[in-house]
Image 1 (cartoon, rainbow, N blue to C red):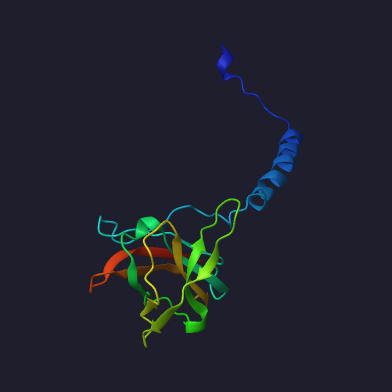
Image 2: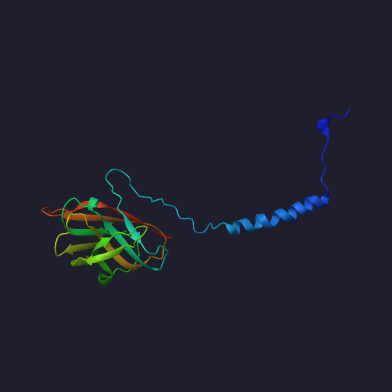
Length: 192
């Protein structure tokens, strides 16, 4: 006796060939339709994420290696608790780029968003000192940077380094009435 479950259904060979010819172009073209090269995640990695480190906001116009870039390191009102007499920016060792005084400035900035661009509103006159080994930059503004509702930025116009990676810049500021600089926060920029 044969049961109902033992019957096998056989497809003709022509149906298998048509199925293969119909599905193979679709499967081959799928990787070309999906743009997997431009996947940008909104994730920022920061070393030492304990309570002693503060994440500061930044903006860069170009993130590809060896291209000309403008980087804005923001000092927002929430990042400053007092007027600042001096701002120090510690440059990571791996950020191999030529730093020139004429391409670095301190300015009052309008932070851009969805409908507007980030731009400097007013340059802050300051003496700029770059360490000989390019490990830090000191800004001595002629008037203290006020702790008001305005945002300020250190602006770099540099060529991105040859190597890709994450670069963490640290900021220190000397408040008015004190002789020691205190930690303001860190920026972690990405070069692809």
